[in-house]
Amino acid sequence: MLNFIVWNADPELLHTSFISIRWYSLMFAIGFLVGFNIVERMFRHDNAPEKWCPLLLLWVVAGTVIGARLGHVFFYEWDYYSAHPAEIIKTWHGGLASHGGAIGVILAVLGYSWVTTKRSPLWTFDRLVVAIALVGALIRIGNLMNSEIYGHVTDLPWGFIFVRDGQTLPAHPTQIYEALCYLALFGLLMWMYWRKGMGSRPGLIFGTFLIGCFLSRFLIEFVKNDQVAREATMTLNLGQLLSIPFVLIGVFFVIRAMKRPRVNPVIESAK
Image (cartoon, rainbow, N blue to C red):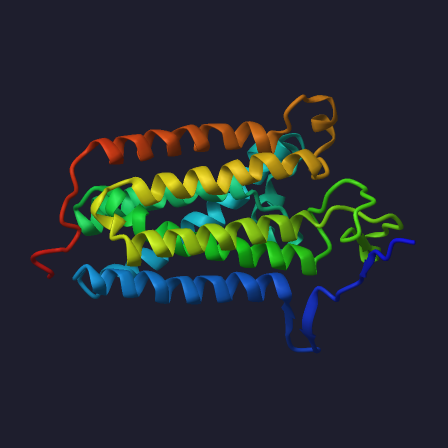
């Protein structure tokens, strides 16, 4: 007889009459704080001005939240939100899309590079995505604690029965699959930057991140439940269709970086 995992975690770590702390929010916050520390170390390593990292954090937080929310609105539930526009700002009701968050971060880094660093955005992307891989893993743990975004029914021994979401059959814990993929990617990117000095090949770390993140997402979507009803009739779901361009862009930047000579990533005149 197979022993499945009965999952009934409380999505709230702490709840009082004054405050409520959810695991998802905590994972999100920890990810940003630890990620900030990682990027700050990289910036110091490459002699970047001290003000650059705090400014980047502001840009990225805004880009992530706004992009993820609007991504969910436009990619997944436009019919609903176009009829209820006031609901768009109610992020506490749920509804964030990682592809929208990725687009938001890309736009934020473009703006940040134009306003602050005056350098190629690839210099920032190659450092920022290392932290983003870790943040992505922690956010998926938050999804696990919320008993959401899981997969199809399975008879594998590590299947989770998400009883808090009303399930009685074991399903693929796709949150864990994605978290493990992102943690492995985080380790690879850290190795590329700190051990192999790949910051000297602009775009290589960024391209590797795009391939690793969105290819794993593409593959895991095959065992993940649809997020919206219309995906039931699609050969590839929205998550997969949205992942393909990111993978192709990643391949482009990896090839481009390997064909070009190395450059000195150190900022020579910090201000």
